[in-house]
Image 1 (cartoon, protein in one colour):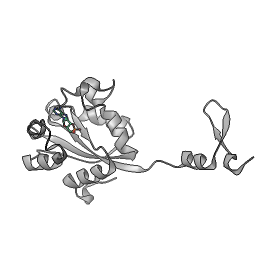
Image 2 (cartoon, rainbow, N blue to C red; image 1 turned 45 degrees about the vertical axis):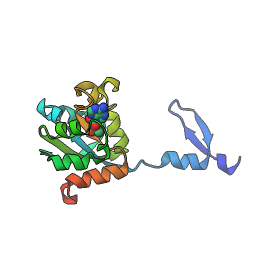
Image 3 (cartoon, helix red, strand yellow; image 1 turned 120 degrees about the vertical axis):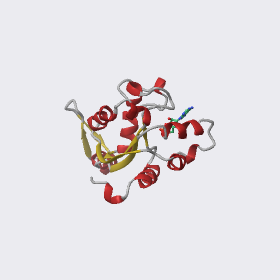
Image 4 (cartoon, rainbow, N blue to C red; image 1 turned 90 degrees about the vertical axis):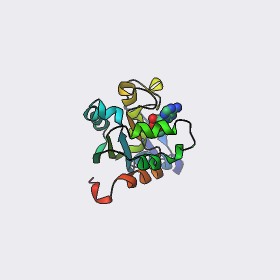
Length: 170
Ligand code: CMP
């Protein structure tokens, strides 16, 4: 047998198949522990949904390693959503995010960025899958209950906007 095919992958049903050494090592590699940034938005805090959303976060295996309730200033909201500055909904977005308290969070876990976006569901609640935060709780695309970072670089920048390193306890 060639060196490339000397590993066996054991399948759930008890059978197995030969796979390459490279694929074998890839499958054994644990996923990286990541951090992502979350905001429970004013529409969620107004309806007392912090605990309900946190329950979905924790049920997905994510750990809330930092959390605080704050009233975002206009400047903070404009900085946070600067990437959307040219969009027609930017003004409405800033108004919405400063209309009441938000809960900012750092979530930690394997593949946390993708996992949390799965927990949230599609940005537009009309397109969100059953069981997701947006499907269960969102009122509209603007009042969609929660935000999650879309990638590792964004997560690092977003976390740093609201938390000092010593406020995050993993
Ligand atoms: P969020 O994940 O916080 O990232 C950017 C936000 O902009 C998004 O969730 C929505 O709440 C908001 N948004 C996106 N598209 C629209 C839209 N067409 N109208 C109003 N708000 C929007």
